Length: 211
Length: 211
DNA sequence: GTCTATAGTACGATAGAC
DNA sequence: GTCTATCGTACTATAGAC
Image (cartoon, rainbow over all chains, first blue to last red; front, top):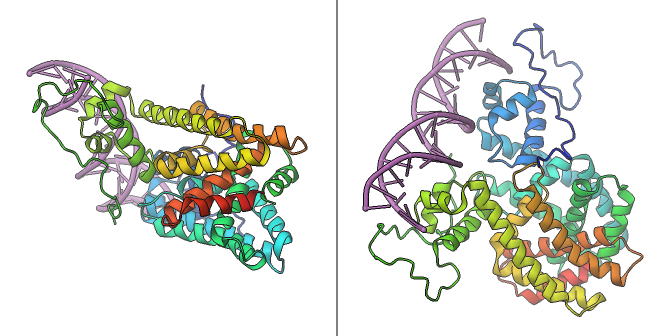
């Protein structure tokens, strides 16, 4: 009766090296994503919080999944809440950038199609952040409420701008929320419950539903 | 740096009566919703968990919001997880019933319109459960995963059945997920970010988006 | 800048009076 | 069946070695 299912392999699986197997552990030459203590912690945090939720994920869990000591988490982020807020803010930036690039120069139906495709692509490539976003976006009264409001306004606002420009008779904000919701819920249903299907089918279904 | 902040007035504000100010505390004559220890606990739990999340809500918080002692929570539900699973299961039952009644005898576009209206009405009347559902529905690997899968399948399946019957060329499950997502996200955006607007406008916007 | 060790607290759950 | 009191644990955060 236990989950397993999705859980697509831990980000790092705890190398758990001692403090000084290498004397120069962070030479900072060329560095890929996920390298560097800070990035490792962020990656581990988003993966664990997506599965279990913020409250059910301890800093111990995050630290050992990232292969660092707990003290390093607090040194780099100050508190568990601040770590989570960093996860949100960085994820929002990436999501917003991708959506803005997708609509750039497009209008009306073509803009919606591009936006839905970009959103589904991001959900496929970063499902953990998508889950965290959905779980937190309607929750009021937490430390990171302001960051959440930004996600909501940016993500839905991108759809709303297209609606306002092309279909001025519609309510842009609510229609934008509906379109965003259609793409996100279909996208996560796809990844969580039937991940083998190709992206094109999902995009087609969303566009069938929202046109 | 501690939370506090919002915490918008407890549902019951802890009457905190001693054990026997009344010698016959539960005569079980006529009883409205929310009366009875079990129902008070469930109501308090869904309200608090919707705002703060499962992990950030303690059994102490739930007990005092419900005006009962912590021991009563464990006597009635056995564990914090089991309490939450009860919240989910009972909410699912009510949601499913409402949606099934809404489509009964209808087909195609009329069925979709009725379904969206029923869903928005339920979200307005029980926003706490809607928030909990959205927060948990894509999370894998928790105690109540099976209950979550049931919510997903029932709620989306109701839309999917309409799609399968009326538009057999479409992918019923994904299209149903998109429609469900459109209604839920627009509905919660409405209640959380612009609650003054009338339901009709929200329904119209959702139907604009999904037609 | 990362580690280990620990302080201090809050939590889930249980036992027993009433 | 609900209460109060308490047990044991696990957690966030900090201090200090390296």
